[in-house]
Length: 193
Length: 294
Image (spheres, rainbow over the protein chains, first blue to last red):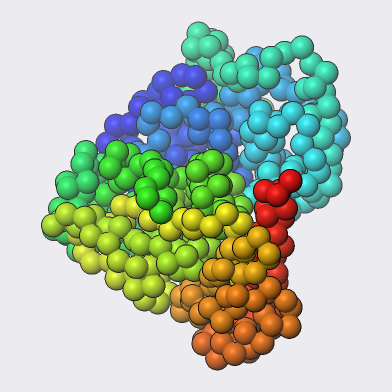
């Protein structure tokens, strides 16, 4: 069946089976590999994406159910290709990531939290990422990263509700095929090796 | 962790959905899918057809009726949690919702889905049983309803028949002025399945005497249980009186063993949590009463 999904501000269509999850469709059809496949049964949170701005698990939703929503993946958070959002930058600065597997989900959960709550308490941050499992970095630095990002955003002049999405032309320019260039390049085997 | 193939249908009306569910015994309704999709992924469920009821207008919305709040089946848990009508008129539901899964699952999971799933440790069925809610069903012959106590039969087992689906839940609203709620649960981690949980709603008069009380326990057995503590009406809900009343009904707390906890442990915890829930509800109602007087 054919689905039309609005991902990071761009409407895209794909031919899917009804049993294909939104997660697999984002990764396999749109090459948006920043959304990570972890447990694939709704426990780990690695596949978190935003649906109309709210975090959901993309492994617990079929692509066939996802039409009509604004879907935001980690690729949609950066202000421009190759740049980091304030939250992404804060994760780097406070060593909020080690292996990086949980990071896209953590950052999207943090992004949704900071959209609603400019100065969350430690408890509110812990609650917001309680559905995201980290197995190496340690939650301490992740919580620190989100606190740091909240402080930076408070001092920022950028309006908070600025939609985090690329313009259609930008995406087309940046990605000759689909998705985000760096991810696809990084995963592709190179002949030089 | 990939589901087996199935056919996906999104009907345009509730009648169409019911007939699709009625004509094929391998068809399952899907709304938020937060329990069904993991079951499909693990292939514990292999329906031939999924009937997506999520966008049916008949199942949406929260409305108030005389003495009740009717919550449409496809109301998302996260939406219900923030809804002013639910927070003020069905405070027990607002109280338990932060314990239902995690925020990302509450953003998709629905009130009706949790009811239809009938997990013995689930919080929303516990609210329905404790308050004596009515489960409203859509059937091929039109709407029908039954008390929550009759609807839940056992673990993941309800009185729902083929071709039927939960269309709404009618939660009773108490008319009293000073109402308080209390809720506790014990699980391995927050948002995991509860080994035992207790929910209480009490109403106090201006002198602090109990005029109405409802108590329910979940997680310990096959289904949530509503316990009769009407003997506490007229008392001030002092700790000793509450402890005696709970001891008197503790025989009704049928518990079962599993890998995580023994039946004896579950009963002990349910007794302790019941006392705490009533005390928390009493204090909550007393605080409302003070606020009203000031």
